[in-house]
Length: 179
Image (tube, rainbow, N blue to C red; front, side):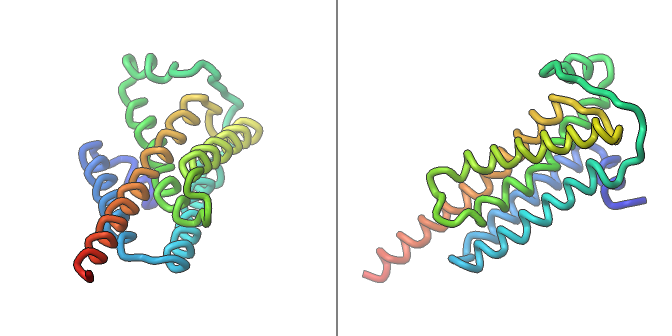
């Protein structure tokens, strides 16, 4: 059994806890990082996240039939009848969180636009994956997957934001103490 399958079949309470712990650990880990080291680590993890996303969503799937859903939020309605769809949506959110957590650190000199860039990168990657899934019949092309993926990157971004605010606070506190 692959790690991804093992993670997917865990009880959802465990999955939520693990995602919260990952979010917290990344936030704490990145607080002391500075400048170039922070950018390099962010870039490496962003690339690894994107590679994992492509592997999980396209490369690790066998061909099936061409299926598509272009009705936004249809999956939320369908989940009332098939509750397993809630798990699928949550996993789509979680899949893109690491990208949203790491990509902002790699964006040099783009402070004002980091969130927009993260959301657009997640949107473009997710749309590309859905198009490939449909064209190769490797999963369902679903607009709700795009919505969940972008939401995941958006939520992941807040780990970066919190880390930066804590770093700024520590820096100001240390400057005051030095005076």
